[in-house]
Image 1 (cartoon, one colour):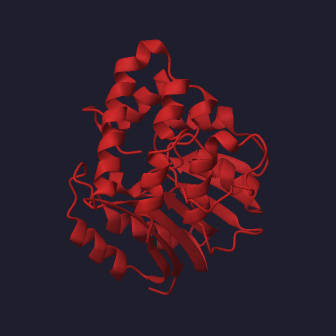
Image 2 (cartoon, rainbow, N blue to C red):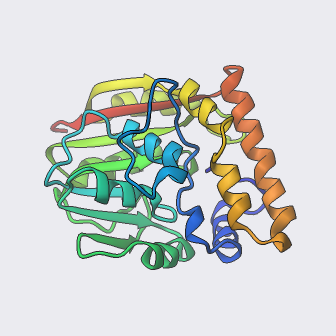
Length: 260
């Protein structure tokens, strides 16, 4: 989720974690919806989070996760990690996040021998070289100032031929990047792009349906946090309008590590 206040990004997420501690708000992604998806694949008890599960599912589409060691960078409150652990057949799933408040919530919400969480900067990962089969980064990299350093770290920690599943907002005016330069950096990195897709329509649909990310936040927050939640709502509405009218895009890539 994009920053929704005047606070610095890390401070904002810490504040969100302190204010909203309910597991009803475990997913921080904007969600994904398709009119012809009957959600028969969603496990019983997960129906409330269908849009958010669907976005993780679409992000890792085409990747072989069965028996894999999977790492999500920028794991937030752990909802995406929960999907990767319970839906994909992955052998182990690790979530990495820079925010200590997020990590506390992750460890409280999501437990199991095959899941873990670690503190770390996306641009200097606390992972051994060639130790990861599949790496996932969803709706987080627009917060990173140095995309080149991040991509270099992804290449370092992936095993030869490993898969990088990447999805994020792009061209968004709320984030002060040179988006053309970031595009060039991505395409010059040592990855073979196996699939790329603009999924703006599906994300925009999810933001306009019931149980969207804002609905879940409002249900999980206390009345005392109404003003804080309304500020987030303003940003969410701005993102939806930007996607709807083509001023921003939501894009996904599946890439394979190649020799540098």
